[in-house]
Every structure is written in structure tokens, then in C-alpha cells.
Image (cartoon, rainbow, N blue to C red; front, side, top):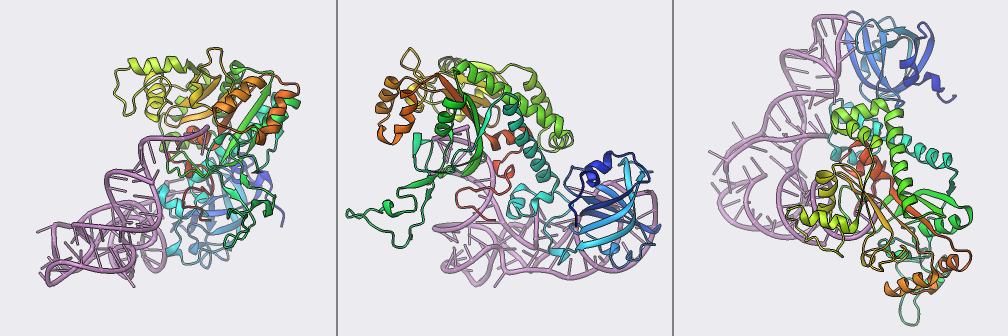
Length: 469
RNA sequence: UCCCCGAUAGCUCAAUGGUAGAGCACCCGGCUGUUAACCGGGUUGUUGUAGGUUCGAGUCCUACUCGGGGAGCCA
């Protein structure tokens, strides 16, 4: 059996005006409506688009009574027929069936969890293997795909090199979060050192290994040879975070640019986000219209506005002033030197500016050691892009390229130099100003689709206490 | 991890401490070029788990499990 040709997918057939053409439709039945006039309407969906294709099954079909009349939601079919202009409202074309083959029935129809009516997202998570058959999750999958394509498109158009950073790493760098250990030692009786600790020297890698929390440091090494690079891969955080915007396993895009400062970093981030939003609107218009209708009626308007508007740029110190003058009472006090809390970020993006914003130049005490120190010696050249509802979607910085300053910062942060020997080598051999950022892919999908929970924009979400499927 | 809320039919939800119900799904019948069709009939339950209070618990109490919202951490 050949795979389904692109011109035989439902999406192509619905756009076709090639009336009279012989076609074969393969997909899953969404619903069946019978007409006493001697035929049935079968809605077939194959995931190529939101819409289903209407098939007319006449009673003259040899298996009309035995098969067609038993079709219910979820059955898989292969239908040969003729493409026709539809005489009724609701669809441009339909297929008059010449033969209908049922490939797979639904066992125990009463127990099939997918129904024509809406389901709650909470329930769909319990049947994550079947939820791509729903309109919402199918649309999310298509938008996610369009965005993944657009990520590569954006960077490739600009001459960036795609870098595959390692998933397993032995550098427990930068304290971006708790890490998942990777080990082949027997958890019941691991080898011990004389001091009684687990002896990772006997482990697979000869030392303690983990799943990566970021490909940034590796990306820096390649940027300092190939100039402009980006990573796009899975990252892992073992934090016990239970929110609608955190996952233990998520995908991150991390560009890194040599000969680049914070201003260049910000420019790229803004252009990148606009490119992604535009791609979703242009390549998935039906799916986006669906989200705009059922999930968030302001969605498309907001995205179009962002594409055409400038992002607000506010230094951290200015942001603190705005918050102090806001007259709002916050649960957490606004104070220079303290990190911005969710409520502060929400006020700034949702109430004050009402659009995405970039906060830069944070106090060095709340940011990572590798961020470049500003001349005031109090702040660093960091930037966070904040968007309404989601909060931080991008975190980035110009990196500290000066060896002496970097070593001083590491000492301030209580970090040993030895494990970072290769990272320090970059400053030792041909160092250059460079900058980069990390974009959370799922948070971007959330923002683009309006989906409330991050668990519904990734096929199989991994969260604390939950890794079913 | 902390605070709050919830768990009843396959799904979405009702039910003063006193006989567990409706809509949808599914099955049967009717009707119609139908559009998550419509009309009539029918099947469906260890009320999340384990204890406790009570003549009597879906309902009150305790613990646990799972889910949701918010917070922290971050992308």
C-alpha cells in the first residue's frame, strides 16, 4: 500500500474544483447522518486540516446495510468515489462514494471516549493517545508543526547554523534548575566510595551525568567558531513546578551570535517572534480562526497588532519606577534588587503597556554569572521578553566575554572554575562580544493558540507525578 | 513545595443527612440533501480510595490518591 499522496488528502480535495475526478479518501469518521431518501452523509477527517470531507453513501452500495449503517465516530475508512460540487450549503465539494471499505471498527462503541460533543481539556489529557482526533488538539498539532518549520526557516534565511546540542551532559552548568540524573547504576545497590557516597566513577560515563537544562553553553562554543548558530531541542527541568506554563520536558530554541551585543540580541528576538506569529496566521488560517472563535476571541487581533507594533523596551530600573508609581498594591513589594514577580510582569504587559515588552539590565544579583556586567557594576546586559498572560517567553543576555570579569562573577556566585575550564577557554582564545537567548517553544505555542494550559500544546506532557503514555 | 477548589453513568453535570437523576454518547424506531441534524423509546452506577460519626452518608468528619486554579522556581 502506497502512502497517501498529498493531492488525495482532505485538505487538497476540499480546495479542488476538479469535478468528476476519481478520488480515494482515507481517514476517520467524525459523524454519520442518515437520510431516509436512501443515502447517508459521512464526515471523514484525516487531520490534514480542520474541516472534514462529506461523503455521500447511497443505499445501492453493496455493503450499505452491513457496513455503512454501522459506521460511528472513530471508524477508519477508505472510500473510492467521484469528486462533486456540493449542491448544499456547508462545503464546496463532496465525494459520491463508489465503494466504501471499513478498515477498522470501533470496538465497544458505547465506551469509545471520543464523542462529537466538546470534551474538557482535563479529560482529554487522560486519553492523550486519542485526543489528536479532536478539533482542538488537531489544530494545536498543525500550528505547532507550522511554528517548528518557521523556526528553522527564520534562522536559515539569516544564515544561522542549526546546532544539535547534547541531551546528556556532565556540566551541571549555571543552576538553571534541578537536573534529572542519568545513570545505569543499580538503584538498589549502587557502588559506594570509601566515604559511603555513590561512586559515579563506576557509572556509564565515569562521572555524574544529567539531562540538559539548556544548550546555551555549547551553543556559545560553536558561535565562537561559526558566528551565528541556533539550537532547537528538548530540555529538562526537575523542578517541582505545578503551573499551567511549566513542563519537566519542553523544547527550547536558543540562538547564539558572535560579534553581537544586547541591542542586536533584542532586535533578533523581536524579528523572530513576529516571524513566528506571521507564519501561524498565514499557514494555519483555519486553525487560527478556530482558536479565535472557541478559545480566545482577541487572539488574531492581538497577534496582528504585535506583528505591526514595536515591542516596548524598558530597563529594569525604569520598570521598578513604573510599578512603584502605579498606585497598585501588590502581594510582593516592589523593590530595586528584587526579581519581578508574576503579578508585576502581568501589570506591566497586561495593564500598563498592553503588549509584549522587553525588560533589560537586571540587577546582577538576580541573574546568572555569564551575563555581561554593565559599566555601573550593578546591572547586567540581560533581557526578558514578557507577553500578556504567559509572562516570560524569552530570556537572554549579552555574555561576559572578558576573562577577568567572568572569573570575578563566578567567584561572586560561588562557582568553581575547574568544571568550566572549556567555557573559560572561549575567553582565553579569541574571545568576542556575543549574545543569545532562549525561547520556550511550548509557551510560544500557548501564546499563538491561546491555549490556557501548556500540557495541551505538547503531545505527551511530562509534569511532576505524571508521565503516562 | 505552599494556599484554595473539586472528584456522582463512557462524557458534561444535578440530587434538604432519608428510593441516585438529566442531557449527550450508545442501541431500537421515526423523519429529513443532512451540517456537533431533529423526534420517540431503551440500556448504563461498589457516588475516587480507606476509615469514622449516624437508625440512616453521594451529602458531615479524618487521612490518602488524582485533577484544576493561584503562588514560588523558570522557558
